[in-house]
Length: 207
Image (cartoon, rainbow, N blue to C red; front, side, top):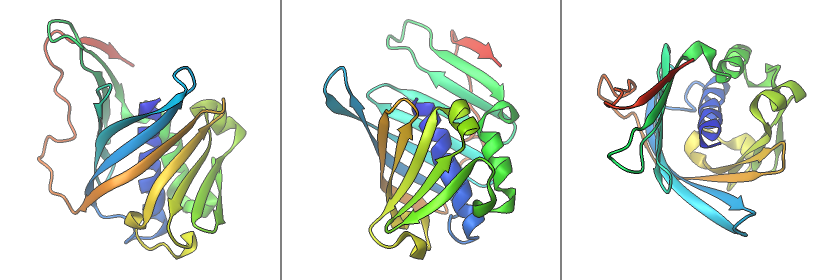
């Protein structure tokens, strides 16, 4: 689920860029707080992490706590890595071509702009901008609705930083909230920042 949220977060950045050339910087690093209501525990559980992005198509998403997870993707290859709980055990990594990811369907649909996507419809309502996914996309992604929240009229937003949070509603009724804690623009990353080096003794799955 965390990976899906990552991909959807990446979609937001892409959408924003298609909406306005200056809306999103060519690179940035953002910290986030994610809140998920756990029915079994009858409470809200929070996780924290970081997202790095560099245009075009480079993203590094890391869940730091409580359950570590790393997603690294560049225009040609993607890695999903789950480190072991015990250093003596093996971690797991899934490697695949970026073109095989479901997100490419959404990215391709954005070539004609935000308002012309065949995978979702947009709706402005006060301080919110909502993306309502089509039935086919809901089946493919398990997500029904994604909404960006701002402290002022959404139609007046000129920068991604002006949106304070986003919420995701799944087809099965689950709801997730993500809050942007900090964002640094125009970050210069190392040349290999969006390439993952598989550690020794890691179980590798290739799709």
